[in-house]
Amino acid sequence: MTVYSGPVFEMAANQFTVIANHLEIPMDERARLLMPKRSVTVSCPIHRDDGTVAVFEGYRVQHHLTMGPTKGGTRFAPSVDIGEVAALAIWMSWKCALVGLPYGGAKGGVNVDVTQISKRELESLSRRYMQEMIPFVGPHTDVMAPDMGTNEQVMAWFMDTYSMYQGQTVTEIVTGKPVSSGGTLGRREATGRGVAYLARRVLKELAINPSGATAVVQGFGNVGSYAALELHHYGLKITAVSDHTGALYDEKGLDIPALMHHAQLHGSIAGFSNELHFDPAEVLTLPCDVLVPAAMERVIDARVAGKLRCRVLAEGANGPTTPEADLVLDKRNEIFLIPDILCNSGGVVVSYFEWVQDLQQLFWEEEEVMRREYQILDRAFETMLKRAKADNISHRTAAMAIGVEKVRAAKNTRGLFP
Ligand code: NAD
Image (cartoon, rainbow, N blue to C red; front, side, top):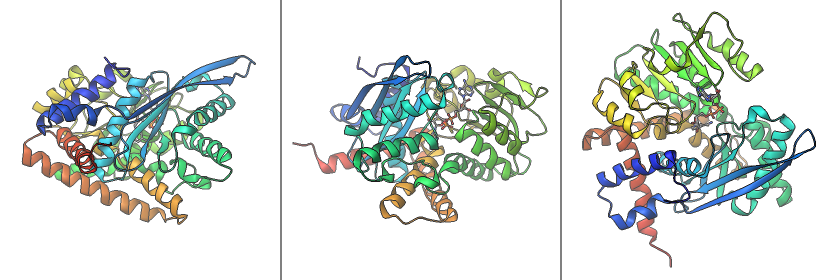
């Protein structure tokens, strides 16, 4: 038992054990690699609109500081607990190492249902959370970014709050900010675009023409909506989409630009169409060429994995597939898995570009951002594939093994202080 114990942390720990066994990492090195360096729990009191005071619990977990500052999103969701945040921080570490960024993983979160608070309350909570975190974060210590339930506006409030305390503007304290406040072009779209880019690359490897191929997307927030839009631009038909309010299905292909416009205006896909309603529980198992889970973790368990009818599983969300489901997928060679730490890494890659641009105060064109993002994704994809083939292991094991190996090498070279 640790403070992190819970289903999501157990999942990250189990995945790590598989990798550690594969890499034959000695037992006495494992805890140092797996367990987070530091975790902080804070109480965030705010004034509610009705004059009462409410207190929300917030967390930040920094997994390791071996390769540079830690980096990771901040999640505002009712499911958030310290174990979930720790698991997400660990996955960030393997992800950053896999794609070659000079970061350790971190993650933060507040246990709150953002649909139940007003915009003013959200601003108060965001600012209070950042204010509580000031002693523990910094542009060279820990850099935050958006995740489920947070967005560019929340990042702007984080940056403003930190800057007010420093007495100067410190844009490089968070990434995923609006372009007007030191953000980079292409960050908003980066994660979804990366998911779609890799999915198209795999379709080509499988000799499936993207034009006319089909895709299904679970989650229509930042990652899901931009993944769907980019796949739509590549010529795929998006036959189904779901979010927390329900699902839509159209075998002819949904009008994704119109659906995005609707979701941006109304905050969800609800109300877009009365005729296209579909059972959200059936979305993941619809027949399609590309399936993109882009909502939350642990949605594909062993039962769902046995029923999947996709050719490419492009994991936009973090941890959407359980280790039990992985065992099923290992036997289903007809499904090409693009594991989360590679598939959704476009987000942290472009966050890294944003941090670099903020530090240098030199900003790039969007084409430059995209070119460099795709270059990094291509390199990581090829490395993963080569490793999977060489060691005869799954894509997930290969991707994670590369990440774990790099962190281990850095730790061993630096040694153990004191
Ligand atoms: P978001 O808050 O913008 O969107 C989340 C979406 O999931 C919303 O459309 C919501 O309605 C939907 N959703 C919630 N519960 C659902 C359910 N039960 N069924 C179907 N849909 C549901 O969040 P996001 O930033 O798009 O993040 C989504 C996932 O991608 C998370 O796992 C996150 O950790 C991961 N991720 C995000 C980024 C990023 O840059 N934002 C980067 C890497 C990974």
